[in-house]
Length: 118
Image 1 (cartoon, rainbow, N blue to C red):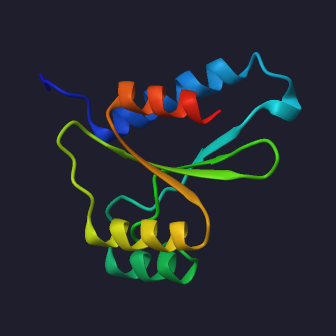
Image 2 (cartoon, rainbow, N blue to C red):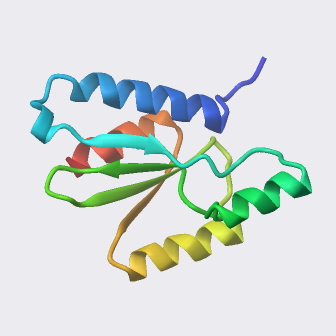
């Protein structure tokens, strides 16, 4: 049995918890959270097809569209996760364009950080 949850498990728990919390808000004040499914294994043909469609290595795991039009990008890491160079590069590009990018290690850190962002 795993001592710490996987990144995927953390992401599922975070999305579930945030959507549940936000349900109490009026629709016009409710953030919209969604995943950017860039991961996974693909054969070379499928990888080329996905790349042509705009899949980009290093994009954060989640995007949260906030009321008023601001956007928060969220990168989730498991307990001992490490950012890949492609992630560091994309995060720097997003920040250069004026976006907010958060990296969280574990569910508790993500919940605490995103609670203060609202």
